[in-house]
Image 1: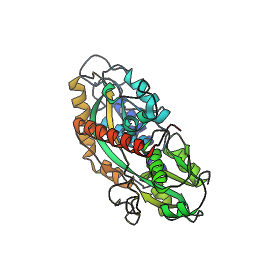
Image 2: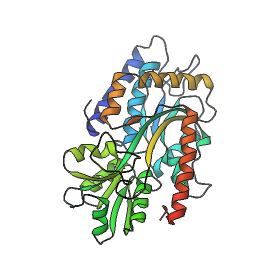
Image 3: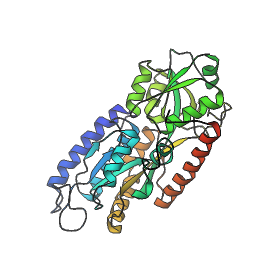
Length: 335
């Protein structure tokens, strides 16, 4: 599977389509023609995966890779539907209202539960206790990058530019926005956020010089970094990233900003234990395959295949940390 984020998406789409055809014709009596399921042991129908982001970004590709594996393990078709909007909140709301029977599930981003609530009213915030977490999946670190023509090579170069920096993010209330806002605030850099709905349009804007810099997941930027079209300025992990070992962390450059994105598989609250157990087992078997491990490596993803409780603990800790940082620096992500 190639390292390009565009090429894997085409391949995965094709494989998922092929898997669907096989599931419909060669499952030995298992019903797969109804997404709502039927009588019998779960699953008896298609399992729909929804994505709260545009096609081509990290969440989309991870969902397609996982759906492909789970569909193969359970012997059913696993269609993937993109439903972007509000950093995944629109998709989450729809999933939250779905019947808790295991036939509608979604990979969701940590930022929707740890950062987006800091930009909206409590009534509008998406709450993790509205869902059942099946398993953790992977971590995707952030990188701030600029075009090769800009001349910038570090955060300090942005500070020396003496102008308001327009920075692209993957949306309001995302880790990309938080990492950028914290960096510019602590560095004393005048800046303006330009939010896009997902990684793909954010990357396109940066390559088209519509913004000065953009923060995005490493997997979304790495191909263009290695190709010389983008210059990485900083990563926002605790330590340097193996995928970009020569790029300094923000902390190494004097700015203690640590923000990561991680994802986990969810189902509507109240999904039966036996259904969750089957989904977890299929996910674990998918994680163990050589194909999925290769997918992680080629898309710069760090496995975070942890228990639901570990996911919930991470969400709780990050929520408290990010709120404290925004209060300390007087940052309003909602603008």
